Structure formats: structure tokens, C-alpha cells
Image 1: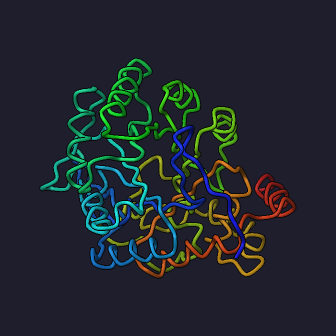
Image 2: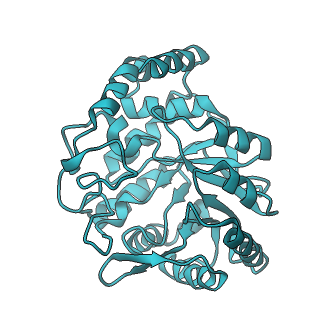
Length: 331
């Protein structure tokens, strides 16, 4: 097996593998106040727990969730799966969104320090733990004024032993850099995949010694190659009724033609050396920067095994990385 270097979350001394797992999908169905889906469709909680256990058995230790995923349900599933195995895992979760757990509805947002403490207390309860390893602000466009207060609040949470480190989930390098001025800020979570690079954010992570936690590493399933299968077109799947920020899919969960063409352009390089398309997409991220920790989603044991299997191949070579750069520039 190829050896992938582990990652350290900032200056915290917390070590994680080069691959984490994202827990949005296992939160199940939830919605906005207009009834539009915000989840990935129906889930089987027993299968989700089995997949989390399989991930642990395969050496995956970093699990990223959020209080709002499934309106609290994802955290509850993660907590159930890690019962008795908490010391094997590094847990990341997020706060900032308001939701009704009984109706599974997103209802708003709150960027105040008081709500941060309230949300943290609730997350600790759902996760069944007394500390969170990486606590992340989930409001990507919060003002710097609010962020300053929340950064101070996170430092207080660290002093109290409620969290070990914190980060901002944002695609704005200025905001990420601002949060990183905090002593215990350890990472930035941002979108990055072979279809949409993030050079400024990766440069910032290298400069500040931050972990680059990569959300959407598989472009929400587009980079799995399973265009015609799954539940993308079904009720309850955000990809079937894509919001404005979700450009990879059109109505009904059909891949947008221009993005499908980009996948086709890089497919042969990503699947070389015996990798699946998804494994190649993860390998691209590892080749792109030694700071990257992609967090692909999963809903089954089989998906957990495929994603974890990417580690055996390691990162793409420099030549493969350069070839993909040429191909994506041309498309």
C-alpha cells in the first residue's frame, strides 16, 4: 500500500489521516422553509452506522458533520456510531444555522457568541461527547465584525476544554485568513475538486500551516461516474432541485452538460493505474497540496470502502497533475 502522509490540524498536534469522511448525506432528508430539499435523500441509519464502523476499522479517523445536517440527525448518527469508540475519532462539526429538529427544517442563522455556546452545548449532547476536536463556523459570508467576536468565543471554548481547535467553513480567503489569526484556529474548510481548483485558499493554508479540509471533493457525486444511478432525481435530494450555488446538476438531478463534459475530459487520467473515477478525484487533491484532507460523503459500506481504498494508490504523479491542468484549461 502507498503511504500517504498524515495531516496535522494547524499547530494543535491533532493528527488525522489524509482522508476524512463527510457526514452531510447520512443526515437524511431535511428542507428549507419553502420545502426545497437540503439533504441527499432517504437514508438507512443502520447502514450509516455500519459504514462509519467500517471506516474506523479501515483506519479513517476524521469525521466532518454539522448540527444542521438532517436538522441534528447526522450528529445523532455519528454519536451513535462512535459510542464506545470516541477515542478513535477526530470529530469536526459546525454551527451558525438555525433549524427545527422536529420538522427537519432550516429556519435561519445566528452569528452571535451567545448562540455559538448554545449550539455547541446542543452538538455535544447529540454527539454524545464532552469535547469537539474541530468546531467550524458554518456561515460562509458572515461579517468580519461578527467573526471577530466568534473567534474570541472559540478561544474561550478552547480554554474551557469544550473544543480543541476551530475553523471557518468559507470559500473566501480573506475571511479564512482573518479567522486564522486566532491562536487555536487550525484549518479552513472550503470547496475544492478537480473541476474547480482553489489556488488562493491552498496557498493560504500552506502559508499559515492550516489544514485544507476539502468539501465537495467529488462534486457532490458528479465525480463518481454514477450519473444514471442513485437517488439524485428523487424527492428529498438537493441535487434534484438544485439551489443557485449548485451548478453541477440541473433539474431532476441530471448532470449539467458543461460539467459532465469536463468530467469526461479528465476521466482517463483519473482512472489510470486502476483507480475508480472517485479514487482518482481524491488522488488529484492529495497531489495538489500536502495540506489537503478531502471529506467525501457516503451512505453505504460499499461507498466507505471505495473511498478508503483510494489511499492504496496515493496521490497522482506530477505528470498526471500537469496533464489534468492542461485538459481542464482547454475545457
